[in-house]
Image (cartoon, rainbow, N blue to C red; front, side, top):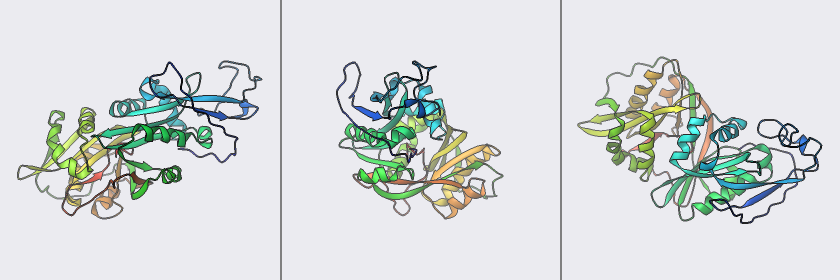
Length: 343
């Protein structure tokens, strides 16, 4: 979420509105006496004579309504993420809407001023992401309002999310606890260092065989996310590492933003994780790639930096309810995230 330092007047009201498919709470954002001087997420005036009324019309406030994210034109979501510098393409939004549920904050003429999504796994867990607001709406508390709706919809579930620096204070106020840092490695893939022979059999995995990795992924991720993995398999290139006929690790890659994300990467140790990542990286030499990992140092983190992917950003993994991350010696571990929202 973007920050805005201007001190603007705020008032909020909540009501039920007929004609919408889900809960309809309304937040009224008071933008002062002259709306033309306030900028929307395109950098254009929120009220413009070329849109629907004369520039001289004075509007003191407008209402934002919570609407199901599946009902909104994907181009409006794309514009929202572009407005805060996030790399999501329309196709990325479409996939995320298939994988999860969410809401958007829209005004009376259908403009989108914020979003929030959650991705259920099983009956008692979900990850939260895509909590985006325009700077103006964020200054008026829209981020908190959106998260209140998420918490209401996810009542009874343990939650996890990856918080940006700007959003971190909000999640602390909502009783999320810090667990770890995520290091976003991205860049143009260079020639890989020589790794020597693979210990085992490393080969491509057809999407139809996605169910063969569920047994290793569950202990690594901490809960069953088979539905998400099945959806990812449809749009990903995947590989598995087998040793003595047993799957000991896997990795997937898919299009996202400017290039491709390599993740999830699941393995029992750094050496296996390196071989899995290398299988994908060698196919992407000279192209833009991204790996999100909680490995701050050690062989895996060092390897992906050697391949031209330095750390460009950090976010914080947080949880509410039971602890999310529980690493054990020699047990499977998530070395590379599927994505910030998907974790």
